Amino acid sequence: MITKFMAPEIIFGDHAIHQIGESFLRLGAQRILVVSDPGVKAAGWTEQAVENIKETGLAHTLYEKVTTNPGTDQVINGAALYREEKCDAVLGVGGGSALDVAKAVAIIVSNGGAIEDYEGVDRIHSPLPPTIMVPTTAGSGSEVSQFSIIIDPKRKKKMTIVSKSLVPDIAIVDPFVLMTKDHLLTAATGLDAISHAIEAYVSVAATPLTDVHALNALKLAAANLRPSTASHTNLEAKRSMAMASMQAGLAFSNAILGAVHAMSHAIGGRYELPHGEINSILLPHVMEFNLIASPSRFAEIGDILGAAGSTENEMEKGRFGIRALRSLADDIGAPKTLKEVGLNNPDFHKMAETALEDACMVTNPRDVTLQDVETLFQKAYE
Image (cartoon, rainbow, N blue to C red; front, side):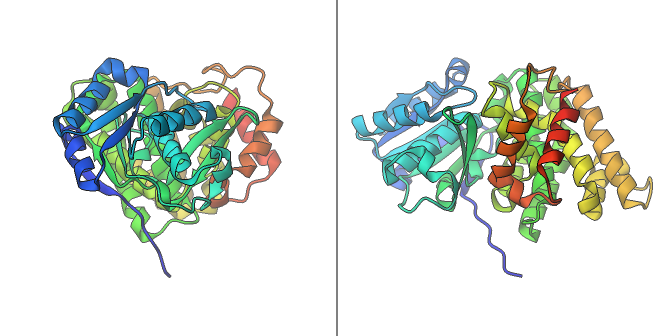
């Protein structure tokens, strides 16, 4: 068996955000496009990044209009600004949305065309400019992944762009920045990290290299998401969740994902709903569906979540894990149904068609039909 594993240079630790300027110097950058969003700016992290860039004598241009579910217009505007200001490098500071836009901008300014041209796998042919990603949430894993997710508003679809070119040059992960996040965002992003770990572990493309990161990410998140949600000042829990998110990102970047994310992308392309919450709602339903395809792997997940020693039956351990995840979601106040997060009059058939076209569905451990996806959507809705 031949495997490959892609990862950026990783700088991890409290106040690592102060390494941005020096890191760009090492990459030979002179003027950096900083991609961020209003919430990150309000928390002060965008300004810290900019100040660090200034301290090292580098120039910058700021693009801070990224929204929760970014569309093609934000990529177009960011790329235009990059060109106008004659930038030569890209910095993403924020959650998964800001980092995804930063990557998409890097694609366009180096490869040309429209971002729609790069939907799918390995369609990027020219090298990207130097890129550094700084996550401000513990969930997306985008700082280490080969993914960028952008909405095409014309098709009402979240495009999945996958390429080794999208693995950033450097990921700077600073647990300290997580202390400004409220409990709802902490809960949603933490459950997103768990969904990444689980889907990567049961993916048909999983390898021993991805398994190590997926399992450790799940262990860390299972033990630390509750205390991290309960207290924004619990730095020890924040460190563990930052590591969990990053390791889950390394796992899914290389093993890809599954039906949870394919379905979540289908919802997110049509409705302005939070990605992490959608994933947490879909996850137990998809786990129940996938259980028979990989009982031993779901049993391992169950053991991590507390089933160890309770039974030797793999299916029962897997079911225990599903119940434990639902209990975790309840404890941190996560929503239980799609209706609860504001999904109104959904067209399950259309969304199911879109989900089946998503690149993430290819690595789901169980074969999935259109009717299967419609049924899963219906279960998660009620």
